[in-house]
Image (cartoon, rainbow, N blue to C red):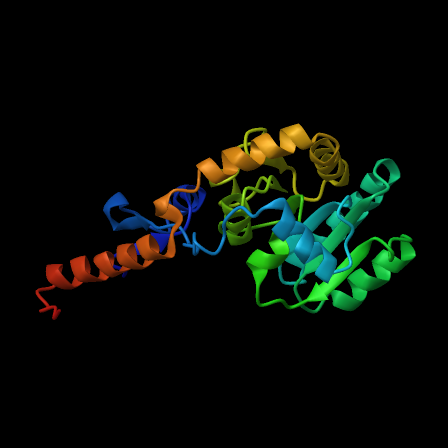
Length: 246
């Protein structure tokens, strides 16, 4: 019944065509979920350390961060178990979990049972996502399903290497072994190995971060997103002969 359907990544377009959710290609529009490119930008080492001091994180800590609602689909439990393996090799590793949700108590209990309480920080809900991402060395999103993974876009805009699941729209953003690593959802070993590769090799992490930043063009900006959606509405109205004001 739709005149147009908007998708936020190419894998979702492919899925919709495969499942016959949309039957005609001319009904499809792909518009990425835009971010504020002025806000999400690379920061200096001084800015990064200033944020770390605010959260009592040492300058030389190896920080893994996730920004996400605390619920089953985002893979927090797998991340915590993978972090346990990371800690065996990298004693200065820290895990920062940003967000709130129904899994908080369960995840906090898991951290306690695994003896990770001194190395895992739950920050709760945070307004300034860009600030806290600036303190991370690696951004991770081990989701079981994902439309696009907006936080990955934000992290790459800030020049951060990423590790994420090979699901949904994520492969549209993350090119495996180029600007980050893609892992099988639910695979603790794959996730821990990818994280250790980046934390143990700062040169590789910096290269991947720079490649991620290079891929963030205007097509991912909020201005382009809003203008593209507006253009679709105007096009549909014109086809129906509806007058459009200024």
